Amino acid sequence: MSAKPYQYLRQAMKEKGIEQSDLCYALDRSSTYITARIQGRMPWLQTEQYAIMDMLGEPYDRLHIVFPPQGQTLRNQRDCTSEARAAILSAIQILSEKVAKL
Image (cartoon, rainbow, N blue to C red; front, side, top):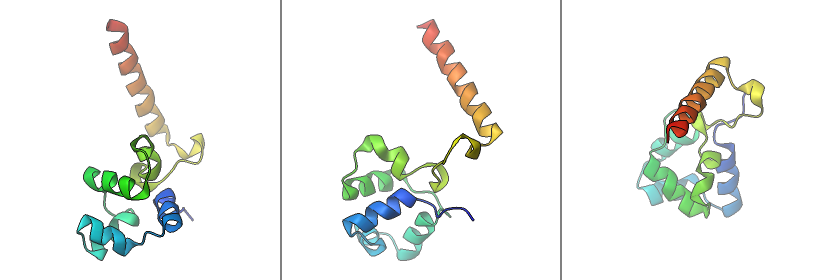
């Protein structure tokens, strides 16, 4: 069974005493809207992510930890599909080539 999405977000909210209803109020969204995002069924808007980071007191350079892709943190390299690895390697190659031209 896979872990619930946004584990770090859930834990940080619990530690800070922030409930989903607080997110509803702060973001001016319904509970259905917030629940769909915390459950990973719908994506968060970037403005919502930054607002939640502010609520949690998290620095923005940790955005990828609080809001990982599809809400799931990769446990190890085996969790990364071969297609994802290939895409990452391709992106690194392209960036390397662009940097070399500078």
